[in-house]
Structure formats: C-alpha cells, structure tokens
Image 1 (cartoon, rainbow, N blue to C red):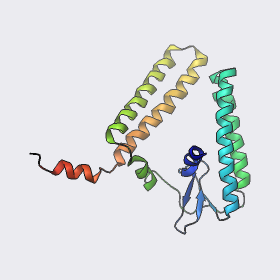
Image 2 (image 1 turned 180 degrees about the vertical axis):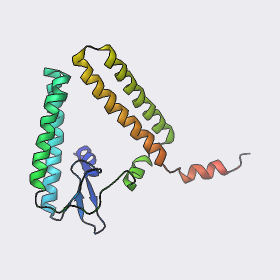
Image 3 (image 1 turned 90 degrees about the vertical axis):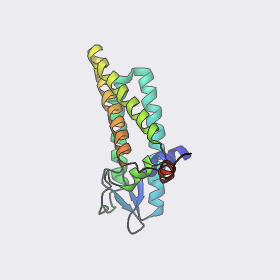
Image 4 (image 1 turned 30 degrees about the vertical axis):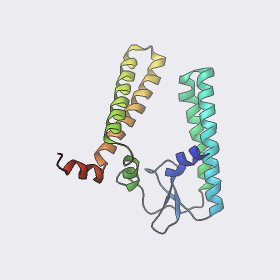
Amino acid sequence: MDLLNYLSKNNFKKNKDSLTVFYPWGGLSKGYVVQDSHLENNIRSFLKVWQISSLIIFFSGAFIFGWVVALFLLQPILFLWFHLKTKRLLAELPLNSTQIGLKDPSFQKLASPRSIRTLWISSIGFLLFAFICLLEFFINPFINRLFSAFCAIFFGAIGIFGLYLLKIKKPNKGIQADAAKPHG
C-alpha cells in the first residue's frame, strides 16, 4: 500500500492555512479544501481502490480484447467512474483559492533527487520512443494508428516534462563546491 500512498500523495497538498487540499486531476486542476479527516480518509481509500481496479481492468481488457478497446472504451469508462465518484465526494467542499501551477515548488522537489544525467537520458529515451511510435503511425494499418498516436503523444509529453524538470533543476551545491575547488 505504500506504493499507492506514494502515487496519490501529489493529489493532496497543504494550503497556507495548513488545511488539506485535494486535487482530483493532479496539481494542474482545481483543488478542494478537505477539513474533515474522515472524508479525507474516504477520498484516499477511493483513490487506492480506483488505482488498483483501473490497473486490473485496463490490462485485463487489453489482454482479452486488445489495446484499442482498452484504451478507447475501458479507459474512458474508468475515468467517468472516477469523475462521478469524486464529484459526489467533493460536492459540498469549498474550492481552494489558489491553483498549483508549473512553478510550484513540488516540481522542484521532483527534479532534485534525480541527477542531470538521469534526466537527460530518460527525456531523450522517452522522446526517442515517441518518435518511434510516430513512425509506427505511418507504417501500421488504420486501427493500430490510434494506439501509435496515443503512444507518441503520451511518451512525447513525458519526454518534454523531463526536459522541463531539467530546466528548473537547481544544481547541487555540493557538486558546485567540488567543481570550484582547484585540483592538484
């Protein structure tokens, strides 16, 4: 369950009044102030159930019916379930006054434990994979083109986000100090 807690931790932040704010669609969506700890536990429990269920249903559906059905039929149904359930859970909650943006310090924290080399390699790898998916788009028959296009967009977005993390990454002061010392 630690992995599920880790995956959903970015959906919860503390606001300036130290109240918990829940962002159902991640940090770039509207946040809802959750003042009741019982409701917060219900939301966290639902997130865990949804994540496990989505994983099982999506990959089982892909194995049984194929990726196209899983991607374009099952995934929208799973997102609809998430939307309707969170809408019901959050119906009476006030909106948070501020929205997290790309300048939020949490993105800096996301970049800080990764080395510049790791960020470069992963970004280039994802962009290369997106390019291969784009090539597949032009080679494959029509039905597989949808999946290739989705893969190109998905992995391209991850690669571009990696480049963004590279841009905002602050250099490690220990490395700077070592680099500034004369050798010899």
